[in-house]
Length: 116
Length: 115
Image (tube, rainbow over all chains, first blue to last red):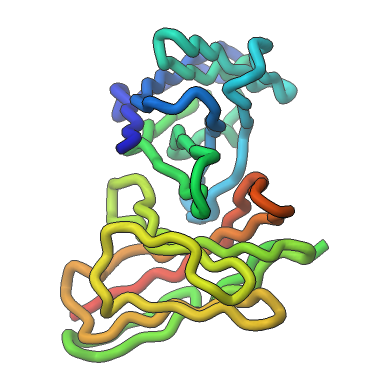
């Protein structure tokens, strides 16, 4: 079974600085997707960024970028120019492509605090 | 474009009761997945529905059941509620074309408290 590990329960960053959140995963599949979701106190899970495993190029969405290391099964999220609104729980998630159900497997999350 | 909606937002039940949670998928999305998120944890997959059929199930007992309707909205039913069922229940919808399922988009969740 696939597993996702987020080793940093909490992280903090100063406003306008850069922070990197770590994620590792375990799978025997060669094709899959990886996601970072953000969950603010309002509870709604919001998609931050997505990476297809077959793509070597790291995904980027504005201030958010990933470092995808397929061989190391590592998928870190870098937030540049951190803003107060970035404060939230961040979840790393894996989704396979085999079979009839492509469920998301989540890590336990990293709580990000942004200090003014 | 309307996003994923869920109702109710909060619910309080007592042990042994039954509960029904509802989810309306985002326009154009034909697949609905349900997740349980206990306090301080990541979401856990309950099951998924595609074209009104269950399309995969996580490690949850049969007292967790669901439905999907022709308009792709969905219900999650939990019978014989236990204290450990207290959690945030998240619904996610996604478009699916053939064997390929796209990214899942989440609703705001229903907070269930079992006393």
